[in-house]
Image 1: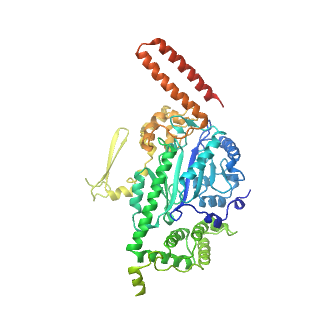
Image 2: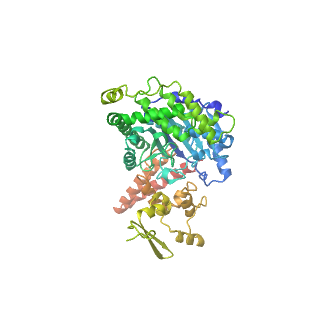
Image 3: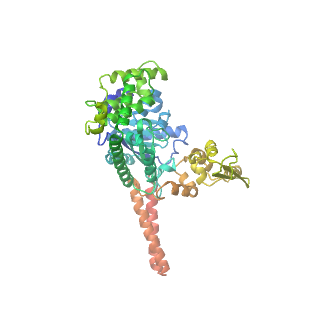
Length: 371
Length: 170
């Protein structure tokens, strides 16, 4: 089956919602597993990788959770398709670089995704919108339990699941939440917060995980340690930290509105101005400005506008999604022009932001705007 | 102490390197250390620091063929230093000593306490049973109760056989 026909449209993807999704864009849990008796993918000979792919793919495809899903070998996907999967956060950038001997299996609603022969033989992940780490852990735990009856994992009673990189050893779990934290960035508290989170043994990364920058004020918080703790403890800790981060972000926004409303409205108004009127705009600038539009929406400055629109624009303005709309191959400058065209068109009916918040809506601010 | 590169600012970063038993020291100020990239701890391979092998020592080992090699997949310690990844599941046994310190520094503990696959759960029960029996055997030996010790020894043998049967199942 063709990937285009399988994947939900960007507008459908962005209709999905979850708890606290104003701040928590998505939750994810991934497990790393390897087969016994076959070297890890990075060291295995091609024949062994192909053997592992065959064994794992048929086991995964046979699971009830994966019925009417999508399964494909990486060499049968175009590089554009792979980038689309990266932009949807379904596969890692490392996996997008793989070809024959590696594969992917997706379930029907794109909430479960299994990467075969990435860094480990198996990288299975569950993901969903908003803050639902516990539910997502249960989903992937169930998938793993079903799979372990069909596959023989490399496991040691002392060291747990044996992984290619010692950093994943033991539980092989990585629990993460993608957070939109413009309030903490604008109030310049973000570095302090990142340090505090690091001290708790959690990593803070950019939009596409390891080694990527925090575009659009989006940060990924995840556990680093995988050995010596149970999965439940790790899930619980991340859950608590994310709940605190939500609170800090809410507080930062409230303080900004109280102490420097003009500065906040200035940022949001300018972001709207550029997005709705530019004739050439890069992907990076778009993400950073859409983050401010998102913030304005959260603050009630764009009455009647749905958050799904901002989320959709965030997705469809990324390079691969943009390229997908056109048959001819675009270069970066052409993409910047077409991106700006699309943004102007989609934002044509969005009225410019109101200069005060709908909730508090008062005081010094009104006086200054009316004077 | 003055920075040995710019010879202007106070040196705050002191690097010591030992090559062929000769010690070299370099003293850098903050600006120069940043320029040279030595202020960034991620610039150093974690594995190379923690596995504790200097490059000179390692090349010696490689030349004489003394380097530890995984018997199952042929992966060597220098491969690990280069890739930061292991070759196969058996590498964990082959490099157990070298990995010990590394695991301790990167994880909360060194013993797995999480999920155990269904097929291994039975095995886990066996190892617990084995631990218990071995403890009681030692106690019996200490008390010089050799009759009881013999019965524990037999029980241990039995459990070990059962364990092997489970492990050998495909």
